[in-house]
Image (cartoon, rainbow over all chains, first blue to last red; front, side, top):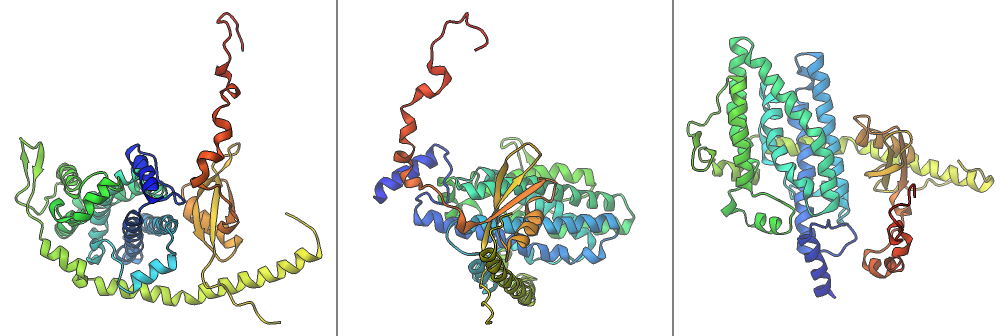
Length: 320
Length: 99
């Protein structure tokens, strides 16, 4: 039986037919999706923390409303992805437990601090920009629920990048201090943003399998290169510099060359030794614990209402 | 009367949204909520932040019954050999208009 099922699965992948929750799939495919999709969901949820930090201090009502809307979107994206992951046979509670126990990863980028208002701009432009590069091809991922969630996310993500660039653009046309703040944020967020694409292709064995199964469509290095090429042009509009003296147009490759990423830093952050890893996890656990009474009250209320509706239904035959 | 112990996990709900008057409700996704009212409110916040809908249906996921993909071959078999259900099956002369 599995041989025949495997054959059907392989043919669907080959012919670009989406795999749906009730279809047979190899255990490793399921495992890989659960890992990638839950990490993705956790990233959206943890990603609210560095930005939420600035909601009360946004410089105008317009910026504040925008930032709240953006953080709300991140919550929504986390929810789309958790429910898409649940179709693979894991519960949201299990995923959240894994996150809180430090067993599940989330994007390393959210372990860096947001020190100034310009960081909110840099996050929108660079971090959301890198995320979009990664996410657009995922709209064609072979697993149906993941692809559908990504389509919705990508539609909403574009405003995130544009609002971030607008923040930086405003600062770049401001006072000397504002210009300096803008450059400083770009300097601090540039390299961590490049790390978001993951290890180099030759150091990323999972990547090959993921591409074979058409979960990923482009390799880490291909996407990173696309991102660099786009940013080198965009930064000119800001009249700012990217903090990499090795960026240079390469005629032969028809791409920009760029400097070596500090992979030691990347692996340290992944291991939990980034500037904010502990804070982020603590903040998540605290929020979850402090929300416990709300969850309990809602469940108790629902149970009570359920009970009283039962009496009502037996008493009369009204339907709505 | 003893209180019913609340269920530990909020149940899963499927969300259907009507984008515009005149269209069908279409499956949008799923979410967790303690009861139907909360499911509708959560669906509004999760799935209609940009005016994607004017009407929301929610139904607890456990009430959805689905056909089995494993049996889809034999299940849909009865329709496979009935091309005569399609208008293109019938060969009529070209001069025939309005049909």
